[in-house]
Length: 63
Image (cartoon, rainbow, N blue to C red; front, side, top):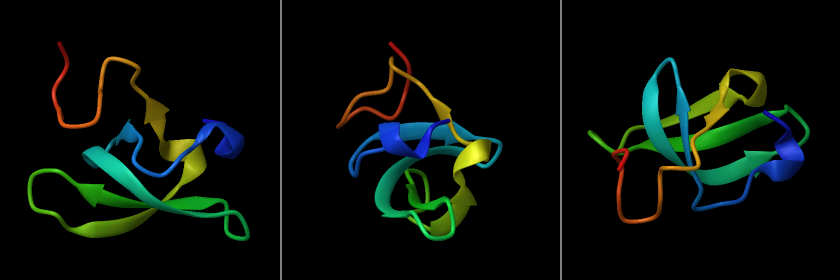
């Protein structure tokens, strides 16, 4: 995924599961993700993120 397409509040998917972007670190090319299930925070390399347009704010499942 392109780091320039990331925005805070955006829902993304990785091999860690679905989470919400709460911060973007351009220096380390990573994003801080809050996982929806347990609210754990994790720094994930942007290359490992998959944008899921079917995920929307307030909904952490596909429709």
